[in-house]
Length: 267
Ligand code: LHQ
View (tube, rainbow, N blue to C red):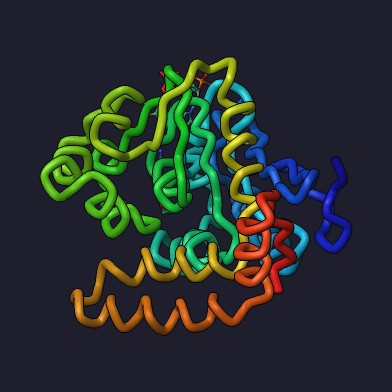
């Protein structure tokens, strides 16, 4: 494992790169990894470090200790110099969610425990979620007189459908890992003891695929929500034109015909 050399040293998260996989661990376990200004600044820096580093082919996002992330640190909101909520969202939360969704490399969320408020939104913004058996999701916003934010009103209905999203967002129901799997919010629930290993195995598989094709697939899936079928068909043809012109596509065919694993370079 090596720390990212181009970024400042992190104090509220761990950023480790090994075997083409960047693992970002929210690391304030004593506070359930609640989001403070330093953690938000570092999280954005970490995703920007991934975006700059073409040697990173996949990302794992997880939390240290018993929580994934309990959302905004509410104690910090009481500090006299706390920014107004709308400013905090525009300047700190929204850029993180936008950076995650714009990232070429896929993000595997390893949801190790409770994901609440903006912590749930962070989980929703991952491309693939695996959950430990005891993990829970709760849009805790309503309980403190706030509206769901950080992309959760956009992402959640797309993940679980409008009816379940309304229940989670309006009633603030806590969703268990088992229900999250049932409603398609997570790809798989695994025993807590094997979450890291399973998330890593998923990231290893992603890291072995062709990076340009993966990035194009991420974009196509995202765009599909706001276009009609005819536009999607044309969008796929356009993207396939790009993917088909890569050296990795030629390598994929050669490897298939030679009955060997492909070696994708991102070219
Ligand atoms: C916490 C927190 C927390 C501080 C647990 N802050 N201490 C907001 C404003 C600004 C900009 C825009 O966006 C947002 C977005 C948001 O994220 S709003 C939503 C913020 N999050 C919440 O409202 C969640 C509040 N927490 C909870 O509901 C529970 O703590 C959960 C469900 C996360 C975990 O429950 P338990 O496992 O039963 O743990 P606990 O409640 O006993 O918490 C353990 C400790 O952590 C406790 O402190 P203590 O000193 O008593 O041990 C909590 O006060 C503290 N804590 N979340 N967000």
